[in-house]
Image (cartoon, rainbow, N blue to C red; front, side, top):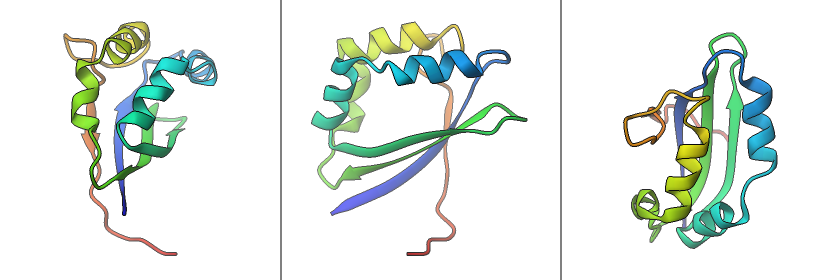
Length: 105
């Protein structure tokens, strides 16, 4: 069984192309950690006026996403992305969960 979740993050002005470039060149160890944690079908969309990043992903019922922040790969990725996104002091992205209100298949 898969669960779909969504959240928003905030990009700093002027970094739209750089954000896309960095994700186009996603490090293999980040992809491996996401898969290992039960994450799949992960997409991020940019709202061009507000620079909000809308992320949506699927995760398995037995996912281990909560452990991702402790991995060396994720810590390196967060440090790499911290200059172009709103982040917390530990470089983790400032994010807000989105509540599902409608779904159509």
